[in-house]
Amino acid sequence: MQALTNRAREVERKPMSLLERAYLPAIFKGMVITFGHMFKKKPTINYPEVTRPFSPVFRGLHILNRDEEGRENCTACGLCAVACPSEAITMEAAERKAGEEHLYREEKYAAKYEINMLRCIFCGLCEEACPKDAIYLSETFAPANFQRKGFIYGKEDLLIPNPVTEPAAYAKAKGGRVKIK
Amino acid sequence: MLLSIDLSLILEKFVLIVVVVMSSLVIAMYATFAERKVAAFMQDRRGPNRAGPFGLLQPVADGLKLFFKEEIIPDLSSKFLFILGPCLAMLTAMMTGAVIPWGDKVHFFGRDIPLQIADINIGILYVFGVVSLGVYGIMIGSWASNNKFSLMGGLRAASQIISYELAMGIALIALLMTTGTLSLKEIVEQQQQHWYSWNIIKQPLGFLIFLICAFAECNRTPFDLPEAENELIGGYHTEYSSMKLGFFLFAEYINMFLSSAVMVSLFFGGYDIPFVNDASLAETIGVNWIALIHTGLFLFKAACFLFLFMWVRWTIPRFRYDQLMNLGWKILIPLALINMLVTGAFILFQENNWHF
Image (cartoon, rainbow over all chains, first blue to last red; front, side, top):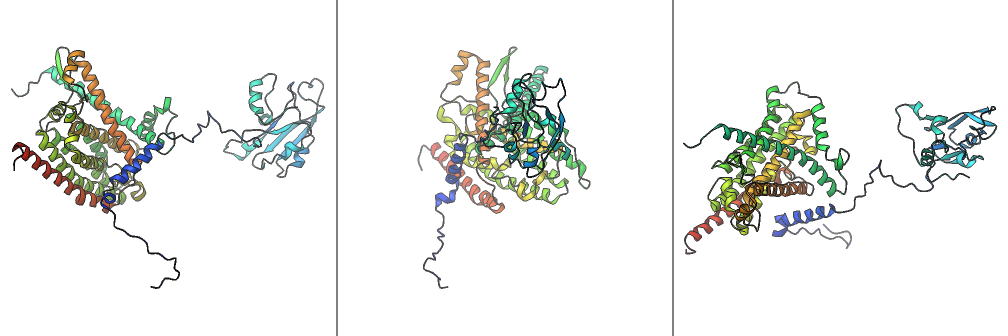
């Protein structure tokens, strides 16, 4: 058969030498390689004990913020719900009554605040829209659940722990991303 | 009288048997753990490290899991043989331990107790007999499963054992010509004289053939064709579940450990401490302490072989069936025959004071 181009080259099919046919040197070479791998650094991160550091722009589960006295920041203005492109946020506003000043910072607060984590795309627009520093995206992500209704996070799931009564839990929930003014 | 049997002898042997059986079970348990760890480290992983410190309780968890699993016996299987298969595999795996000299002797209650269950003068032949019986467990189990993949696995196991036992036997004949005895105890004692009297130096080729055949007899990679997960699903244990499967898997590790022990006693001086005169050391530190060192060293040597088994497994892939047969019949058997002839000629010349 005539070659179409001058680049065609015949495949070299040399018979193997005795050393190659004995296979044992080749096997030994392979064993040296695998033995060397025993001392390599393992790329594994022991997950629950050690976590991979998130990048500073990571956007995870939402938290509803409190001020340093432990009062809720949210005033249920609804800007986050408006900003949300996937319409994941619903809320109901209520008026603060006398004697509730230690719970809510301003006269209006969110009686009900729900985020559907299945709808949420974690874009962070709610965080940008909020005028009261009330909503932030934290460094955790939504855990698995067996039911759809488990993914609708209410206020009790979203609210950050009180910095006055539980400072350790507060610091953990706050993480490194949230800057409280 | 050839053999004086009294109550203390029976008691002493009983204790020894229990200790040997239990310790080989524990060693096999931790061999499964070591296997997973070695595999992980060779693949740049961490391996099991959750159960207990460093994952040391992992084999216990594995065993418990197997015990709690549902026991399935296929409807159309031969029920008796189906159960007999794993039992036989386990039994024959444990039986080899009887003739291996784990140490010299200990001195308790005014008695010298040899650390060997039975010092029979045909020790090696016994090992051979038991090892070749081992494949019956696999064959019976695979046939009784009434599953074509199982049967294929069983057929492969049988033909593999037949092919490699020949080369193994011939390699051993050369070794036995140099030692002149079949008793494992005497073979070990002969190797204690000098550091260079280990049989690996006298019979390097014989050792290599024996090693390769030992891999084949234990059904370890590259000779794990009877299991061959990706060709035969699970091979001979496709239909097995629960602890019956566990017995098959466990028997493999016990076989590995005991064939390591046989290789150590045949070629690597058994419990001999290299570069040390054991007899004079025994006088200075006492018989019991030297027995402890001997046994520890023996187990260490066997552990090195266990590591070799795992190392090879995670390095090279499985042979194709025709390659397996080629290696067994066309390479190993001729090599073993040449080795035997050369050894024979060498011994003849030696006896004739190097004259033709």
